[in-house]
Length: 176
Image 1: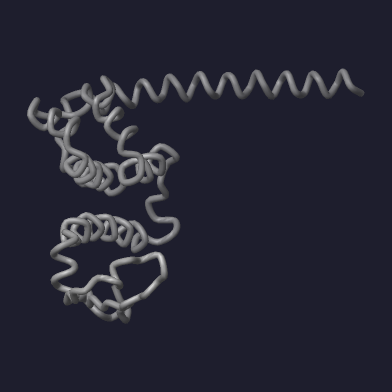
Image 2: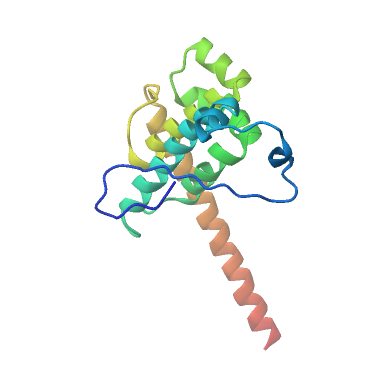
């Protein structure tokens, strides 16, 4: 995609022919138009997925550097959904996820067997996590339960950090 002026509201596709020694397609006896090549390679499917990803990035970027600062967990999800399909699938199959979200059995089945569906679902999930768009229905009481559980974990971590700090301070005193 060619870079557009900031005031532009549309994309403009431009293509270049790059000849590299390792590409044996240039040695073929037939010529293809860009349209024919893209159709033969089924590029439209990938462009559509890529477009969704770019829209997500642009939306996040347009929020500014400090608006809606993402948590570490959100950032992990941000990279997991498009790049780690196996981990993403395990996450969607986890009890924690399934206890939190209302998903029909056929949707869950499709997420376990279809990588494209899983990636698209991941984009929807990211929109929900990052921007609060309610796309995937949340089970009644799941948010409150998760908040309580996270609060308990945060308290355990806080106590562990205090204890670790006390041990470091005690070790410093012994060294003096």
